[in-house]
Length: 348
Figure 1 (cartoon, rainbow, N blue to C red):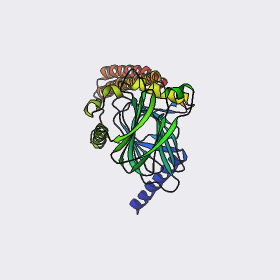
Figure 2 (cartoon, rainbow, N blue to C red):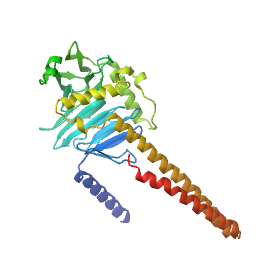
Figure 3 (cartoon, rainbow, N blue to C red):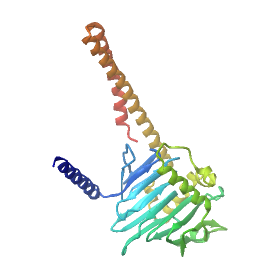
């Protein structure tokens, strides 16, 4: 009876916690991270995060992964699984009432979406394309153009399973100069196909092709890493996946800036995006904070060990040496306080 009662209590607690998360508006939960270099912004402020695993994300959150960090999250409503590659910035625009809308600023994401019902929808946007699905496995990339001189982004929308409705947003330089709206061009892709939207000969154009093998290899490598027993961060896998290093990793800054400018020009939410300098400042502060906590903990542990030694000496009858050790332990422990106080005051 006692075990059954305990089980009921545990189940009730889980239900209460789940209801609490729903009441708080949790839209997604992080289920895997290959490292802790992840920045989450909520209403323009960084969300404090200790262990990124299990972190709850809200509608409107902006998520940015650092170099070599890959993330996987589970959407509360609908059960979709979203994977983020390294150097990726995206926004959870809407995740409520069966309507899911994500905006990819720069980087690569993959979404596995269960079959939707009724009027439910799942959409991923970039400045150049909109991908909508009703139940499929697909991905979207926003990268710097292969020609560094252009400084523009290229969007790839690709399908691994099911179907994806792709709307490419096309415009010429002349249209952009006159602030004219982009011309939408719709197409349907199925497994093994992709649409590439890129700047060609003075205009943004779209082409439907077979899936680039390097894209499949990239995500296959990510899947292997996320299911492995070890989750220790490793170096970038760009060079082993067939991806042009200059088109992704080295082009991150220019590609991010271009996407941000395009969103701003279109009346979007670019002002809410964290800049690359701000992201680096946050990462530096976080490293200093962790270093201060670790240093304080080590010094405090040394002081505690010295104090324990002093108590042992007093118990053994060596009062003088024991009191000296206790005094030294107190001094060492007190010296740990500045490290801890500074770490707590420092806000990444």
